[in-house]
Structure formats: C-alpha cells, structure tokens
Image (cartoon, rainbow, N blue to C red):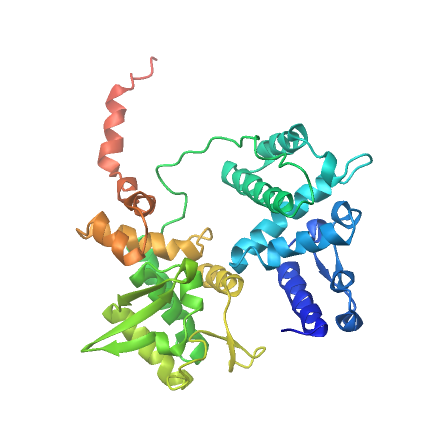
Length: 360
C-alpha cells in the first residue's frame, strides 16, 4: 500500500504530464510548489478549475480520479484534460455550479464550438464531457448527466485528410538526411520504418531495442499498438538497412530494454537513455521536410498514408494493407488510400472541348 507521500508525488507527476500538453489559457492541473509533495492533503498540491474547487474535497477527489484511475491511455488522458478544462473554464461564471449545469448549457457550449472548430474535435470534446459527468454521477457528486442528451455535429468521411508524399518526394526526403552522424541515421531509420511498415508514430517511438529482432532468416519489428496490443511485422529490406546502420553507429543493440529511438543531449549529437516522444518526432519531421524542400504540411501520419498509397499503387490489396497496418476495419485503411488522387493531366485537358471559343 502506497504511503500518503508517494500518492502526493504521483499526483504531482500526473499534473506535470497534463501541463505539458495543455495551453496556458486552458490549463486544468498545474504543478504547485514542490514543498506540497509532503502534505497529507493530496488535493492541495494541485490547482483545479474554479468550478470544481468550489464543490469541496469529495468532488475534487472524484474529479481527479476520473483522469488518474479511469483513463489509462496517456494520450486520451491529455486530450480529455484539454476538453474538460476548456468546458469548465467556459462554465465558470456567476450562478453556475457543477450541479446547476443543464443540457442547454452543454448544448450552447457545443454550438459555440461548432462555429470555430472541426466536427471531429467537437465530438471528442462532447465525449470527454459525457464521460466526466457519467463518472461524477456514479460517484454521487451530481444527480444526473447533463451531457447525455446533447447531440454533437454530424461528421462522415470517406477519404482522409492526411497529406501524402509522392514516391519521388519521399525518396527526396530520405536521401536529404545527413547520415554522417548518429542523429541523421536515427531520423532516417525512424521515418523509413514508419513508411515501410505503415506504423503509427506512437507505436514506433515506444519500441525498445528488443522489439527489432531476428526470426529465422528475416528481421521483424514488434509495435506497441493501442490497448496494450503488440503487432509483429516483417521488416522491409530498406528499413532493415536503415535500422542496422543506426544501431551500429549508436551501439545500443545490446541494451534490449531501453528505448530504440532516443533523444539527444543538447546539441552534442550524443544519445541519451530517454526515448523520443510524438511531439519531438513531429518537430523533427517538420524540420526535415523544410530542409528537403518537400511539402511543409507533412506530418507524422504522412508516412503511414504514403506507404499504404504506394503499396496499393504497386498492386497491393486493401485486405493485406489492413493486416500490415493493424487496422480493425478495411474502412479505416481505405481512408489512407490516395490512389484515386492521381488524375492524369490528359483527362483534365479533355474539359477544354466543352468551353466555347471567346467571341471577338
């Protein structure tokens, strides 16, 4: 059983994790003075939204438990923290308390959000608010869930919006990386692995050195997917070449239980024992895309979409692409298929015959 001091420390660490991913204007939980770690009252070590703090220690504890005990995935936790924090800040006005929030108030907030945000973002915020109020109802902090009857905006999509690089631009990007040092080798191996295995960025950066292993005559990777699942994929020969060059330069192949892709120590080009995270990888991709002169809209997901599109252009099937990408449904894989975007210029030029010549 943890002591009170250890529990307080856990809450302080949790608050720091959320603070890193929340904007200053909508901060939900902020780290307080480190002296607060030793206090018996864990709630006093964290600054809460005013609407929750006014409800007293029981409601405060239940609110914190929603994030610490109910939500296991750290990315979901951070996203829901932003959503709930913005809603609580919006509701923080005279005469409004947690118990007086009604469906009309939630509906007004969703309607206001719909004017400024994308539908998928609005639906995520509504889902977070519903889950929070359900948790508070079960804990008897409030009597009913005011968000349960509120409907979000309709959103249907048949083709994803993820930017895709052509095969020429992808080759240009990978070839532009300076591989005379370990950082360039690391970046090339990471990007190559994402494009040649259709892997999510989180699954790749969470890999350990032991997750790149030999099985028979082939090398495989073990990806850490959502929900604690592992997905094993054979490595493409080019990705294998990139990984081998990186591991040889980094000299970390024998450090099996440590991160495969690691951060650097300041500007020394020396690897640390800490693993890269998604944000650091995103910044690296933006920098590499700018240096290579390819689309500045390139994101982490671009490599997943570009790999799937290239595979399908070469005669691959949606079913096999789904299996490689570890998608639950082929409809999800289809969102990454951009083969139909390659409309030839000759077909477009046919339209000219429909235009009447301009009269003199």
